[in-house]
Length: 88
Image (cartoon, rainbow, N blue to C red):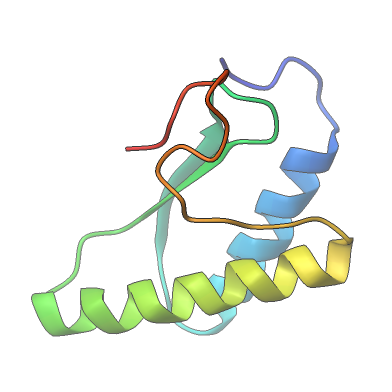
């Protein structure tokens, strides 16, 4: 469920994404690897409704950009693979 090694692709992805988000003023509560291969969770800190809506839209753009830079894909589909756990 959680990362078992101190260094891996998922951790590098989360670290870069969180650094970028925080440099933009978006606070991250915590992050970890989820159950499916490559599935990551990054939780944003609570904010008022309008700020949260803005943060989520920015979050999605940041995830896509970091994925592009690292040569991986980011998707927000609830269950992209039938054989693995979904998100949400």
